[in-house]
Image (cartoon, rainbow, N blue to C red):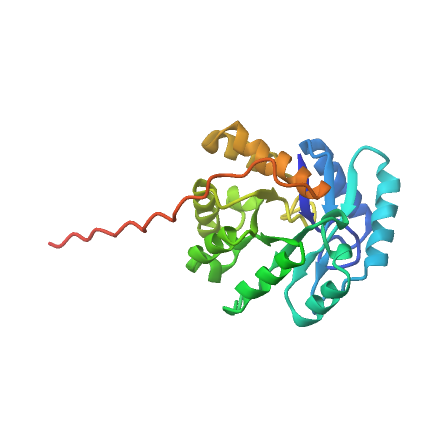
Length: 255
């Protein structure tokens, strides 16, 4: 399996405080059957993205691990004006393995209608946007058709593995499963931050997807598609996107 969204680098954002925790997270990944991890620290107003530092920390961690786990870099990209300006100058440092796929995160307070145009402009620059963990965003849960529309426009969607196992609550789990069933999900990633409540594991989510949607879907979302993103290649597994089924009406009993 390949994890394309992980906060494993030490002392750079809200992930591990030191390299010992980073190494413990890497051991979790190895035990879980993960072979490649993309270190994706936040690029936001709170956490400035310093590509040289990211590469240096990644190199140090890779040296400690040897060939037991392969690391690459990218970022958890917040769509603010400063980031977009930097992306226009040089997109490669922000993208997964400096190729073409970009993890895009939305805030939880507002997502303006102009965001559709912003995502379209990214694609015009040959960047492939991946919308990260929309199931954890209350705005997008309440307007799931917006995520489906972004997929129709050529964007991709990444669900957090622990959302499928209930860590982020029943609403996130329910919407994540619904989007998978609808064919609107392309990647499962850990979004790991530590070894406690945000671990670097994909196997439980892999097994759940395999039990509910089949082996091809589990391999596609957890292995084949993440590897394609790592290599900057077209996705190997492209689910058939279906119309969002209408919500079932509640039935009321009157006495």
